[in-house]
Image 1 (cartoon, helix red, strand yellow):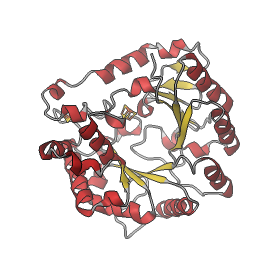
Image 2: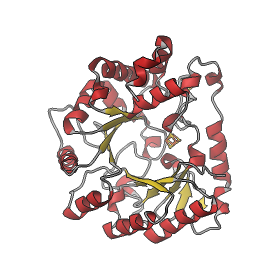
Image 3: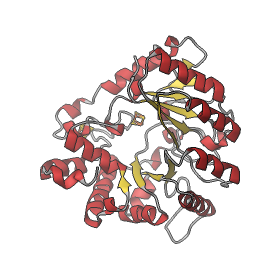
Length: 357
Ligand code: SF4
Ligand code: SF4
């Protein structure tokens, strides 16, 4: 039981990280220092593609921090992937909070100009940012790396992590304009799931009610300022797709556990990358069907299919599709951007939102 079209592999090339963020689903600097084995990992991907007659797939290099793996191993992995005809694209999610050496820059230039690079940002958790006037050393390093990659012709996506501090202290327009000024082509907004370090650091997550209001403000400010002409907003694009075509992608696909395989550095397998450390199916060296039919995987598939009964009564459920199942509800309040979807439905003019696609 696996998705044959658009299968996605998240590969944790390194288990730990150079940072130690409170919301991260890995254990940051304190994590396991192991790195992946390129050959074993690509062989496993090849085996899955062949066994299930996969039509096309994408690989995302993930971590920890994926660039902590040796560049020689990363190069070898990408070369092997590129020999599989069903490969669609390769992505990378990197924190860029390290020295961008000549070797690393060459690696990005050789492999990612055609695919793009993703990097995350938050105010307090990663960069210790209080306001834009007092930038920390690590933030300046990150900004320099972003500029260097953009100067080298890369297409960059900024993922803004929606911590409580960020929502309480920053206006959406400040962040969107910051991303535009730095030269990002895409922006998205990530909500924090209850995994990894975020389980114990519960206070970093905003109230769902406040999150909803902030995201609605982001929507209004985007339309008023026509930011979509200057930066592609993937969060709003996903909502506009759901509203206009009634198809659900990314956060609201409710199909991640079937269409996603996360491969850890030690060859451990799981689904959603956020809970990969806690919900393991097995290992790549086991018979192929053993991890895929493990009770952990089957439970996760079932959990993702089950909706909160409140969704049945919800007037925007055809747009929302009950959102990502990993996002915790607070009492009877879900973490979905309800105000945006309600406004789209109330306005009922598809043309108004075409420009967000
Ligand atoms: S289940 Fe949610 S957090 Fe996990 S990959 Fe899917 S959308 Fe992302
Ligand atoms: S907005 Fe909330 S209640 Fe409504 S369908 Fe989405 S998750 Fe369910």
